[in-house]
Amino acid sequence: MVWCAMTILLATYFCCECSGANSRREGNKTVTEVLDSLLTKEHYDSRLRPNYEGGPVEVTVGFWVLSINAINVVDMDFLLDIFFRQEWTDERLDHGLNKTMFLSNTVMDRIWMPDTYFVNAKHGSFHKITTHNIMIMIMPGGVVKYNARITIKAACPMDLRKFPMDTQHCPLSVESYGYSKEHIKFKWEKGKTDGMSFVPGNAKMLPQYSLVSLNLSKISNRYVVGNWSGIKAVFTFERMASYFLIHVYSPCALIVIVSWISFLLPRSSPPARVTLGVTSVLTVVTVMNMLNNSMPKVNYVKTIDKYLIGCFLFVFASLVEYSIVLFLAARMKIYQESYEYKKDNCKKFGTDPNSFKFLNHGGGVVFNRRSKSEKICSTQLEMMEFSKLEDEMIETPTQKTQRTWLDIKALRKRFYTEKAILAVDEYALILFPLSFGLFNVLYWLTIANDSESTFTNS
Image (cartoon, rainbow, N blue to C red):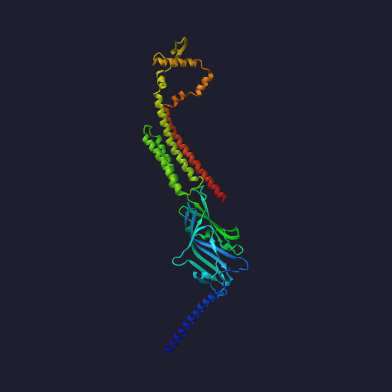
C-alpha cells in the first residue's frame, strides 16, 4: 500500500511540473506573438508619429543627474552625466496585456520615437559599456517609457564681472528637431518647476561650485518654418571663493605688506631696497598672469582684477617712494656742493640789531647783518650780499608776497635736507598701511553689498 501511495504522488508531481512548463512556454509564445503582431508593417508604421491626424503627442521628460563632472570657465560649458527619461503614449502599441513589456534597445528601429535633441549641447554621447545603456518599456494602454544614459557637454554663457564671488546660470534646453508644436509638445514630469529632486545630494557639491537651485520651465521658440515646443532646465551654480582667498587674495596682501619693509631699510642700501621692491612687483604680476591664463579673455574688469591691480599699484608705489628718496638725496648732495649752500654757511645772521653795521657801497648806505665774529668768505660774496640787500630795500610788498610763494631757494632749503629725506620714509610707513587698510575695507564692503543685492533680487 505504501509503495502504491508513493507512486501516485510522484505521478501527480510530474504531471503538475509538465503542465507548468507548458503554460510558461505558451505565455512566452503569447508575448512574442503579441509583439510580432504589433510591429508588423500592416499594423504599425514607425515613420509616422502616434495620432498623426489628431492632436500633438505629449512627451513627458525627466532626468536623474549622476554627476556634474566639470564647469569649464575658459570654454564656458559644463559636463553632465544623466539618466534621460521620456514618456509618451502610442495607442498602436497597446498590447492588451496586464503587465509591462521590457524590451531591449534592438526594438528602437521598429517603433516611433521622438527626435529629441539638446539645443545648447556642444557634444553628447550614449554609454555603451558593457552594452548600450538604453531601456524601453511598453505599458498597458500603449504608454512607452524610454530611459538612456547620456553624457552631455552643454554651452553655458557666463558673466564673470563678479568673479570669484559670482553665480552662474547654466541652461539645458530640450526640443524636437523635426516636429513643430502642432506635432509634439514637451512637458516636465509632474509639472515640476523645482528640479532639485532630480539631483542627488552627492552631486550638488563640486570642487569650486555648489548647485543652489535647478529651475524647470517650458519654452516656445519661433523659427522660420514655425513654432517649436521645448523645455529648459537652468542649473544655478554658486562659486565658492575659499580657494581664491587662500591662493590669491592672501598672498597678494602679504606681498604688499612685505614691500613696506623697504621703508625700514636705510637708503644707503640700494641693493636691498630695490631687490625687495622689484621682487614684490614681479610677484604680483606673476599672480595676475597665472590667474588670467586660466580665465577667458573678456573685455571687462573682474572683481578679482580690481584687487590685484590695487596690490600692484601699492607695491609699485613703494618702489616709486624709494626713487623719490634717492632723488632727494642726490639733489641734496648737489645742493650742498653748490655756491648758494656754501654762501649760506659762510653767512650767519644774528637777530640783535646792534650787530648790524653801516657799510658804504657805491655812494649809498646799506646794512650789513653780519655779526662781528663772522668773516666774509670772499670779496665776491660781499658784493653779492650788498646787491641783494639793495634789492630788498627797494622791494615792494607785492614782490615780497610773490617771493614768499615762489621762493625756490626756500623750497630747496626745506626739502634738500637729511631730516626731510628721513621724513619721506617715516610718513610712508604710516600712510601706506592706512591706505591699504582703507582699500581693503572699501573693497570687501562693496562685495558684501553686491552679494546682498543679488540675494535680494533672486
